[in-house]
Image (cartoon, rainbow, N blue to C red; front, top):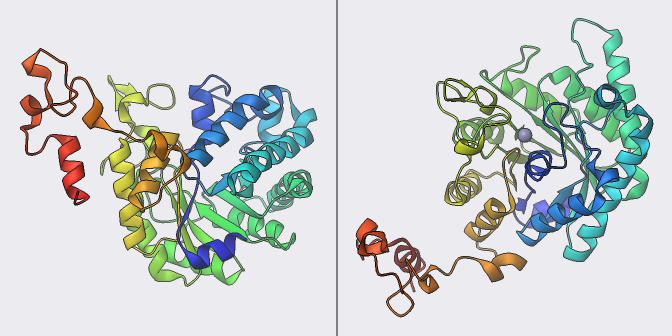
Amino acid sequence: MILNLLKKDIVLGDGGTIFEMERRGYVSAGPFTPEVSIEHPEALKQLQTDFARAGAQVLQALTYYAHEEKLKDIGKKGVLAEINSVAVRIANEVAKQYGCVVAGNLANTWVYDPADLSSRKETRRQFDQQIMYQLPHGVDFFIAETIEYLGEAKIALEAIKATGKPAMITLGFKYQDRTLDGVLLEEAFRELEEFGADIVGTNCFRDPKRMLPLAARVRQTVSCFVAAQPVAYRCSEERPYFQIQQFHGHIAFPLELDPFVLTRFEMADYALKAKQMGINYIGGCCGTAPHHLRAMAEALGRTVPNSKYSPRLELHTIIGDKHHRKERDERILCEQRYNPAVCHFLLKKSQKGQ
Ligand SMILES: [Zn+2]
């Protein structure tokens, strides 16, 4: 189903579920494990509903870090099966209502070590384990994400291919355009395509500005579908990924990222640029919230369920048009800040040619 959707049009992915759950109080920053699926399923279901209503066509089961290596840190190895199964079931409940596709999810294991051959077997075992608990509950395809070693990505790909389901593999790049095992981006994606990946691309770490140049290179390298899922946190050329941004003289990640959140317009602009670049699967990673997704969907010309509540600034009592404005303080009026010709809701309307 995902491949059919991609053949027809761009597919809009979902947002940063783990980070948004943390912001809402249901994931602990630190372990960043997804026990929310069994402890507060209603909270996870609400967020996935919010993503679907904002235009997400794919809902990834919240099984990021639902592997032994991370669950043992919080003393919850025993519920690995339950977390993986329930997360897929919740995604399916929402998907059914909104016509979305459900993706199983695998991520970096922190077990893989290119210098230690025995770690390959253990990495595969942990991927297989997650797949075994996710697959029976309704998975259209699998996404293996945020992987920095080509070696680990290939193990994830083999594990997914063994299920017969389509595989989307996205790698994370921090400073360099090489994987942590030293393979140049082009070579890495060429190999992943050759090994049978259906969708390849990049996710996490970088903001759209820093990720799109890499996405363009992926697009030029492979003939399969290409995905991009950047973070919605502002980075810079000197600090190209979100974990090293500084706020008040110290590292902002992961608790003080608020001042770095990109605006909905910046994320919308990213979606358009990605489309022009020929990216097939456009989504967001950490920091991407429902309001970003709706703006991305609308930038792509779509009307989504929550477009019903999209901005109608002309009705605002401070910055609205002359029929709705009640504000007496001249300094706050839209015209005082922008001048009437560029007052932002007017500008938006004129761009639409209304
Ligand atoms: Zn991320």
